[in-house]
Figure 1 (cartoon, rainbow, N blue to C red):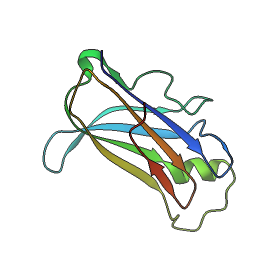
Figure 2: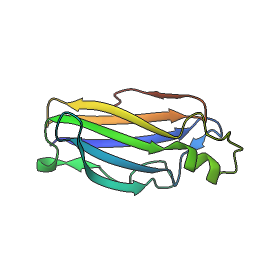
Figure 3: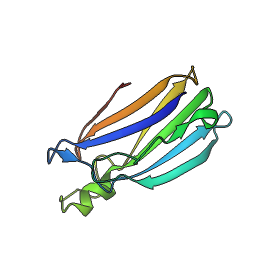
Length: 118
């Protein structure tokens, strides 16, 4: 059964990004994304379970939006105004709804890295 998961690591502090808010959107047209879910990450920097799984996971284009500036400001990090990174969008596609898609994010207030994990 296919599933979509995520995990965020705060590489500035060397910890999971507990409490970081994210939104998952599904592309519904050329310029339109429909909301799927919004949540805050748990103490391990994870969603607490799959964002999508089984029949809810459909082939298509998706976007995860990570609220990075809000998270770091909440941790007491002095950010410029405007912050260098505010919300980090990660656009990706799901081709095989039977597969596991893991979208990790490694982040600081100034840089981020993502990849398809396992």
